Length: 170
Length: 160
Image (cartoon, rainbow over all chains, first blue to last red; front, side, top):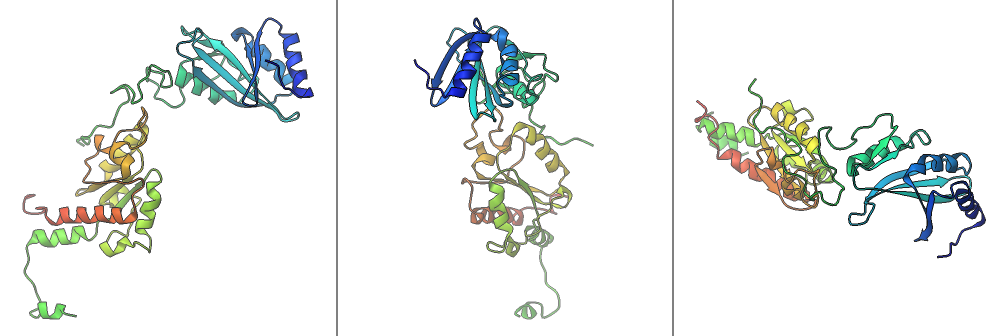
């Protein structure tokens, strides 16, 4: 598929493919947005490059996807924005079902802290090098990851504690 | 006024239960547990248009220790459930509970792992209100149902 990119965006994509020839797996456009898929091992370098050299200073969101039946089950998507050039880019990585793990980008964009904790909480994707890595929504001792496809809609009965309906005897 | 005719001798005779229940039912101060959009209707219920002070419940008490009726208005998640139960345990007896709206009654449209499917899972609910959100009239109706319940209770005779 041919890409419809303006001059500035073309420069970003060209720079990326020249700098990381083996790591950029796919570049495509869909519904007016541009997506770049890279190898999981290169995510930290790619993000550093995009921020330092291409001025993508604003990390809007990091989120996960469960692709369930596909080969590499989990996907992490980074939604980044260049305020100077008015460009929006989605960087994606695919992770295996067993023990999904990827380098944290909190060292590049500090706001990735909560995004990554949320992605871990919902999908069980671990981010290495995160400064404060724990769940963000669910209780600390919760054993499941609610946004995974096999998790039942109404949850696991008894997995989250309800208050006792008998008052304290004191 | 008409009262003088009844009280011509200066006294009346009644049962203690009736007197206590009359007082209790006409001064049921609500503890507003506003958790979502139902709380907006609950404010209208207390405001001048629907004017619940006609039924003696105009005094919204934000301290559970001064309240009689807890109005659970909105969806309850598991984390909030502990706080609600704690507030409920702090309310002095006798106390009543209204589950206002579909979410508080059954979980409503929030059919998911994080929301308690009905606050009767951890609270003794006296009146349920349907609607999403219910109109203030419906809340007044629930309050009147609770007043009916209070008036038929053996509040003193069975306690001794």
